[in-house]
Length: 290
Image (cartoon, rainbow, N blue to C red):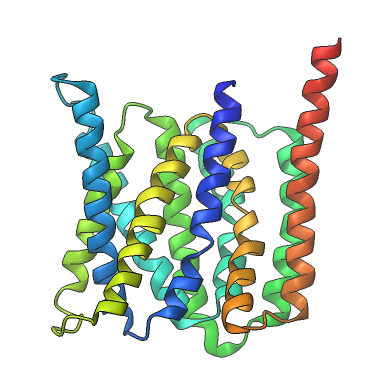
C-alpha cells in the first residue's frame, strides 16, 4: 500500500476509537477532574509502554535531539486538547462537542496554509464546505445558552488538536508518542490538586483504564502517525466521521437522543466524507487506466 493509503487507514481507525470517548464518559459517574486525572494517568502509562517498545525495536540508537522548544510546544497543545475534550464532554452534549470538533479540517488547513504554504486540493475544499453546512445545521439548531462554556472548551480543544496535527506533518522527526505521553502526564499534574483523593472503585478504574488506553493511547498514536502521511486538511476531513459515530454509540447505549438537527447535519457531513473518498478513488482509477 502507498504511504497515503496507510495514512488514511490509520486516521480512519483512530477516528473509530476516538468516537467511543462520549460512551466512556457516560459510563463514569465521577467529577470532571477525577475523570481527567485517572484517564490521563492510564493513557500516559499506555503511551509509555508504546514508547519503550519503540526504543527496544530501534535498539541502541540515540534518542532524537529534534525535540527542543518545538516538542514542548507540541506537548502543550496535546495537554490542552486532552483536557478540553473531556471537560467539554462533561459540560455539554456529545453531539455539540463533536459538531464543534468537526471544524478540525478547516482549522488545520488554515494553519497549514499560513505556516507551511500547503494548499488544499479542490476536493478537500468542496467537501469541507459541504461538511460546514452540516456543522451549521447541528450547532445552529441544537445549541442553547447553557452550553456556551462547553462549546468554548470544545473549540479550544479543536484548535489545539489542529495545531498538533499540523506540527506532526511539519516536523516528521518529532516523536509524537513521547509528545502525547508527556501531554498526558501534564494533564495528571494539572488535575491532581483538583481531583478526589478517594480512589475510584474497581468498576470505574476498569472503565478509566480502557478509556485511557483506547482514546489517549492508541487513538492519538494512530491519528498523528497517519496524519504525517496525508495533508492536514484531508486527515481532519476523514476525522469528521467521529461526528456521526460518537453520538451513535451514546444513543445505542444510553438512548441519548441527538435530535433531528444532529441527525440531518450528521448525514450531510457523512455524505461529504463519502463523496470525497469516492471522488479520490475514481480520480486515481482514471489515472491508472490512462
